[in-house]
Image (cartoon, rainbow, N blue to C red; front, side, top):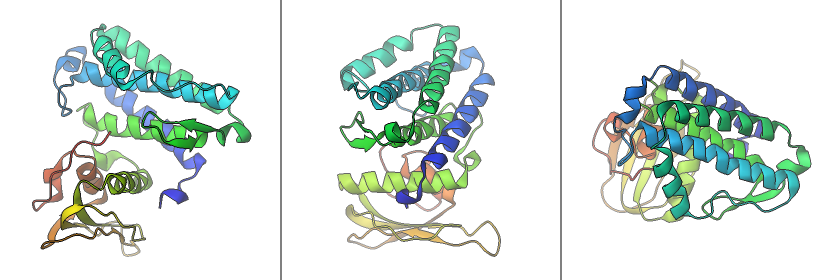
Length: 262
């Protein structure tokens, strides 16, 4: 469950994700940044500008946590989108430098926070009030998932299994809160627990293949709904890709299409 995710976990995933993202980026020629990504309307330049701007935005929350002075992530969603579009016009060298320097500064500022500051409430771009300890998790999601979106050879299967399980927890909770998507019954391997994700429409049973040896423990996410269930097989990585609105075909049999998350 998400409650089992510790600050130490999030900091570790943020560090691993940063290394993974920039490792993938280092192997990507500049001209590949001009190529459209799987994210509609975005080239690699837009994606890199987004990751850089995200670090800058989270730096605002780190400042808020450290000083108590309210500093929102973004002035507005419109300004956020405009900054990404403007950033995508920078040269490849400028984009790479911006992404690297903002990531390094964010890591340094977060490392300076003490226990009291980690517990200070801050507000996400979506308007949720969360403790500052949530910031490393927010960054881990960005660098891990967008390392895949770069199209430089990193897949969901290359991401840590414990991160993927926490990511699925997070996405199911958010899709549950919205309640406007299809109901889903998910099963993945090497984890236990049965959270519920309510949704609209018929349920689709998504089943994870058993991997990881004889001691693997199955974890399921169950969604109530109407209509005949659709059984779909997928690994933990494939379920994370599917739930985040990416590579839906990898889960095997047809499953309800989901909009992109993150």
